[in-house]
Amino acid sequence: MTKKQRAIGCVEALKKDYPDAICSLVYDDPLQLIIAVRLSAQCTDERVNKVTPALFERFPDIDSFCNAEVEEIEELVHSCGFFRAKARDIKNMCIMLRDEYGGVLPDTVEELTKLPGVGRKTANLIVGDVYKKPAVVADTHLIRITNLLGLVETKDPKKVELELKKILPPEESNDFCHRCVLHGRAVCIARRPKCEICSMRDYCKNKVR
Image 1 (cartoon, rainbow, N blue to C red):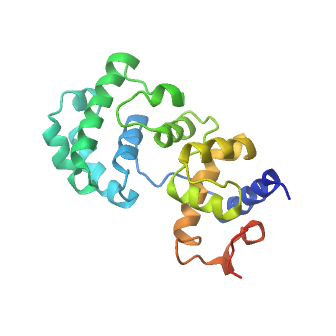
Image 2 (image 1 turned 90 degrees about the vertical axis):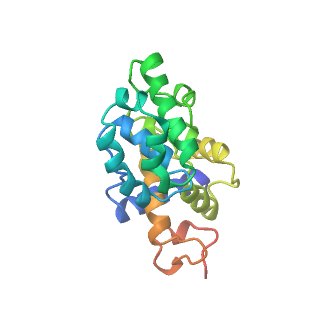
């Protein structure tokens, strides 16, 4: 079985398990999504979802973030960890979006990664979820699971992204990434995987026998 054939099998298996391939972060618009993703770095989505309601109530649009005192943003995002860097990035990102992009998020990874605090993982999430273009969000769950499946043989996020783009059906790639996150939390749990109930067991090179 080729990697591409294995990838297609995995895609179909996860589609049955997780028909709603949705992002775990709660947001109302693209700006809120990119801010929430920045806050999620080295922090759980659950924690971010507890923090963002108050943050977005206090700063409801891009102009309010641009005019905010960084210290006030810090206070609101403190529990997400690395709050000083995150608060600074959020404000500077909003200023750059307003001044250079007319307040609209770019639709390419290349342009998005010019924004403060935005790496390829965040950029791909925006490209996929907001603009519905093929994208691969190489988060820790995706990297771990696709290595276990033998779809990739690297832990480097960019290499994982580029390798998966070669073998995943483009129209399925973004949803596959979301489903891998859900699967990594529910079944393929690090250190204690539930291989006996995994729908991708037949495609996995590292299943517990």
